[in-house]
Image 1 (spheres, rainbow, N blue to C red):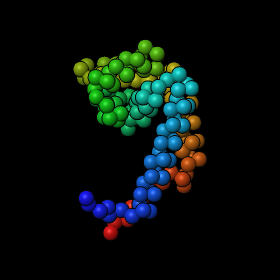
Image 2 (tube, one colour):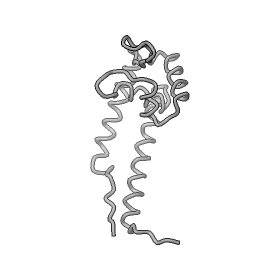
Image 3 (cartoon, rainbow, N blue to C red):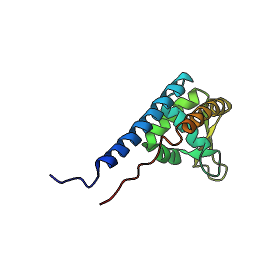
Image 4 (cartoon, one colour):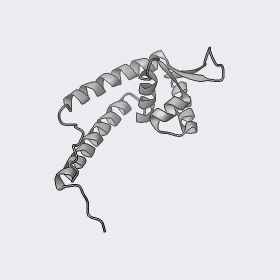
Length: 136
């Protein structure tokens, strides 16, 4: 059995960090479901809108952002399309590439939820901190 190089304070900091992270996740789950979508659907919308330098993303890019398998993201996009939140479009530059774009309803839900998340994150300022672990 090996001894830990982390102190009790390090474990306290890690525990507090995970606790605050889970509290935020729980808040997110509750407000997202109140809007009639799932947490994963919210993340899909967020990652489309938040993709760097453009307002759309490919399935592969979304799979990376969601840390999910390609086929699972395709199914998620299909469900969001059926709800009128997103649409797939073939790229004008490369017809083999499929771009996933937000539709007006997706934009509206995302804007409402993103504002609620921003307010919650601001309320956690100073509470939700990255632990400073000490090395011996």
